[in-house]
Length: 219
Image (cartoon, rainbow, N blue to C red; front, side, top):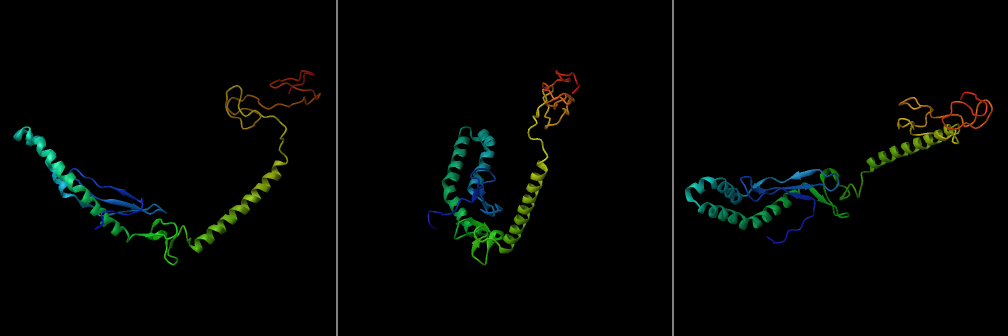
């Protein structure tokens, strides 16, 4: 077996070197839909044995005194010495098995699952989309675009009657609530909008004034 392992970065290493759960497992993901496939778990027996030894260190210490730590270090060293080669071998087996679940696109080089693979074209669906799916998506986009254009035209027509020159307070000066351009604050009832000119004499009315300063007419 070659000492080098070549693979893409669409995997996650779930392996554990130490402890009673020591073993090798790898999770591979589709680079288009991100669905995952997890390789079967392979126990690392040396690491598990070291875990069991370390769990019994308390009892060993009572029996052997200082020798207990020596036993623990020896067990960890034995597990560490064999971990690298065992890990690489397990990874290589996982890669071989994962190739049954993934395809490598010759155009974008991504690894994709069966659901994201266009078998007829030998490419991923990102590079060679399904024709029927693309047609339906284009039909929906066309419908949405047409409705958007019609709605925009209707808005333009409705906007012709909107008084764009009138000043509007968007925040109530009394309670700081948002007014959305209304004549009165919905939070405290404060009068926001007022006639820029007196409805009786046509004179200018200051902001917030209840009566016209020119004729006294109530606003």
